[in-house]
Image (cartoon, rainbow, N blue to C red; front, top):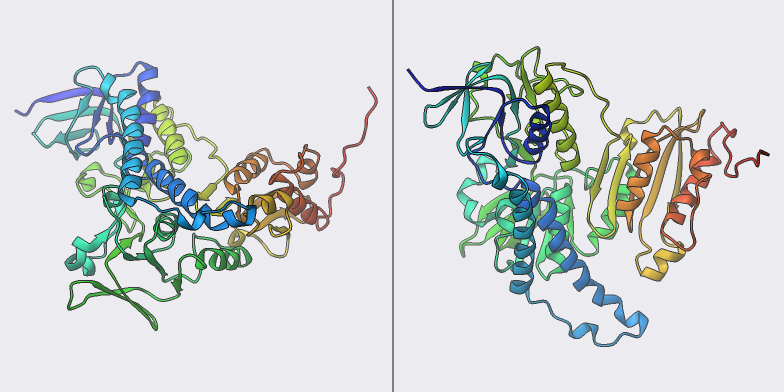
Length: 471
């Protein structure tokens, strides 16, 4: 008979979602085991959010030299970038971030809590580890994350195709590259490579970039980013090997021979090892368990989903929320439903591309008012030499309730947070305009967009200047 161990909760996967889930389970006092056969340290710290921002910062600082002469700073054209040193710096920071994760998590686990292996379902409450050990759990949390997609047709070229799994291990960058897929990752890495001296072209089957749905913001983004990285939009990429061993990239009428391809075609959930059929979980057409987005429960089973494995909101703060929800419900059995936070998506291109609240393509054009401001005349942006972009804000025309925003703007990462908070607090445009705006700051651009929006909504009971009330 195979060895069987019983616990209250089993967590499969120790990425961000798994760690947040674990925090909830441990604080409840329930027994728990974590099973993970891959590299620890989270996708964010190892190959995602953090090392990408380190590379972006290097590229942005180096690119800044191109406007030094405007300020009377001479010698900018003589500055050079040691790519080997730069990539080593990125890895050093990456290792720091990973070490922090490990030192605050698995390094402190009691003996037996972490099983460094893979698990598969035998029954809804029974898991089998690679070595044959079995774990019987009252509840199971699936937090196995995701991995980059590589089309099967490209497998013969795999040695010259880079994903985020390999990019940060490069000691040197290629002389030329094509970025296939211009979503968040493709834009960030493509823009970075272009600024670090790589002859880069971006390719996407979509007519937009970065998932932008507002056509005016999209056009601004294509124009701004396209000045540094040419982009071929609206046609699928085809790859083939040239006689000299390089890669020929074709899309529509465009062709280019490059040294490497950076593939950014999305990520696929890591579920193939789980034997989900034995779990009894209802599966969607992708083979992913069908779950409730407010409780993270799969069907009516004691199984919960959290993080990138769902394929829906692959962002660290969303993974954290899902992990907490799953951890609470798995340890308590309450299966409570929780309100999800206002959507907030940021691309750390320069300028930032941001979407929060309702997207443009989710709005009812008959009932929506739109305000906007171009960054060109904004004083603070002009002083910074970053006065490019557009902010668009959306509100319910009748009530003035703020609904959402899309933008490409300097410090959009900060503006996006302000707007997300206000949307979640269900504030009206007039209420936002009662808030203080300092001068001169980038937030004044947001203020101008809100004034433009305020003029188009019908509800004026919450005006831009609050009524003085006597006490």
